[in-house]
Length: 62
Image (cartoon, rainbow, N blue to C red; front, side):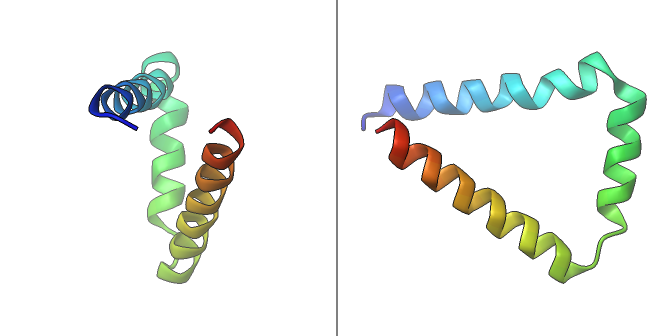
């Protein structure tokens, strides 16, 4: 992996993250308020799940 791959992945991340507030700001704000109400353990679980899914996808693609 080189720096251009890392920058391309980061650019794609920013595009995807920007789609949700652009397309539906009200729903996005509601989702953030629900997330803000979660307990620390719940947030850690979803974070761990996201890391695991990302690693599995990366292994599958590479």
